[in-house]
Image (cartoon, rainbow over all chains, first blue to last red; front, top):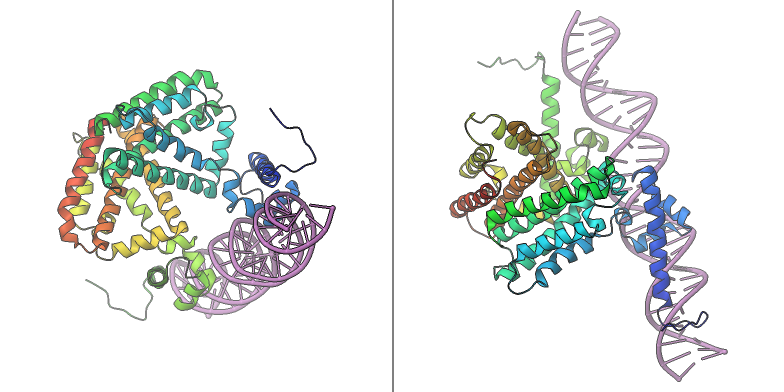
Length: 215
Length: 215
DNA sequence: ACAAAACTTTTAGTGACTACAACTTTTGAG
DNA sequence: CTCAAAAGTTGTAGTCACTAAAAGTTTTGT
């Protein structure tokens, strides 16, 4: 299955080392941020600790915030894929609800149901720059979802009511994440929160669907 | 009615001059931003043009973004006052809807129904920093509204479902503003957009109320 | 008139981020 | 294997938002 060479460079060593270095830098940065907060660590210090130059950090992460928050594209992908890849006869909002419940059941990090997520969220909320980047990621996801929903419903791409629906789905996701992170950080275990979170998700999606139909 | 002295300093000259200087600086800055975009103007240049020192600019506006976006508190105040000062028997969401329609009917700047709002929004959307501040203002308003709604409904101050309602009200407000600014900047007059915007507001509030009840 | 309070200014940083040139490593072709 | 191009890293020298602190100026109340 695996070819076991160690000396010959199989096309892709550059890329692999690049990924590894990126992970290394982001790992070092994340650890420092969790320990001392976002503003308490300078990029120069991260570079020093990771044993690279400051410029290298910026080569891999154009903004300091990206060192801590780099799952933005993943959120966007989850939301749009849920709508795009659903069965023909399933309404978009039903697919989005299913996907949200699946994240919760799988204790996916983006559901917030992971130990340590409380500290993570606290670091974000304590930092204006990270909070800002958090909202920016949410908006990117909202815009992408609005486009996908418009496409699925055969509406014009900038329809305000479609955007309303997309923004509200994002509100639900954000509400669920914060609730999960808040309660797990308050000492409750992920297991204890799981049931309540699921019920909350259902209630919020119910409210949205009563408002706009099946979407 | 007015005491007409010009030489004697009636307690408040300092405050008046301060307000005037603040307005002067923000006016100069706004003009420059509209002409050349947010990133195209440095704070030093604004200070120079306004004939003050750079530090004075920062004394009046702690962030550069505040020079262009300083109506955040006003939004918060409008939303919370609508709920706080409503008649006892009026549901909170009905009061918020009335307030939104009133802004539209009065062509209030925060409704977006003002000539030149298109260019304003374009400058905001063209600048990452201003877009970020815009979202931050929205979040402040959302948090304040959530607290007020929770109080009005006798719920705990951090109730996730109340926050969902507040966030959705904000989504409606933001959607309406963008739609108004987009269409007036596309050449339509505020009068032509007014009727459509009112109807859109009603539809969005209908959707929200169907979902969560009268709030 | 005078002292305290409130502003403004100057000075001297810090820290994120950029442009650019020099240097090193990896890759692919001959 | 060799070598040149491509990709990546590094150091240098900025720019710009923003801060801290001290000194100078104007306004205010007595």
